[in-house]
Length: 160
Image (cartoon, rainbow, N blue to C red):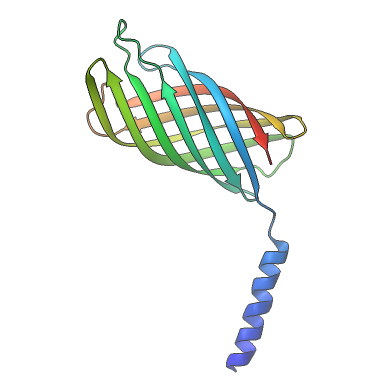
């Protein structure tokens, strides 16, 4: 009986691997704007891997500081889970994740945990090159100057 279960388990596992969609990865460089508390520049990058519908991503971003306008600088590093449409030309996605942030304004700073939620679209251009547009809402823990930060970015993504 045990041998029979082992054979069935091995066949089931082989079928799962044979039918599984190949993983696709991408790397993105982006520029954007944060609207918290007023418009200022954001730049960063992301590396992700996706199966058919679920993906995972690691991203880093830098929001510029403007001491004259009292807009803090913000550096974030996030790990995200994505749910995406399994289409080739234009791919919609939603994302949620968490990580660390460091906010600075002059000599003051705060480092703590942050969460984010958002979504966007990846549009195929030529070959592996895609245009990516993304909107995120970040919730900063601890005692930041602004606990909720919104950002929008556009970037170039290379799928491989």
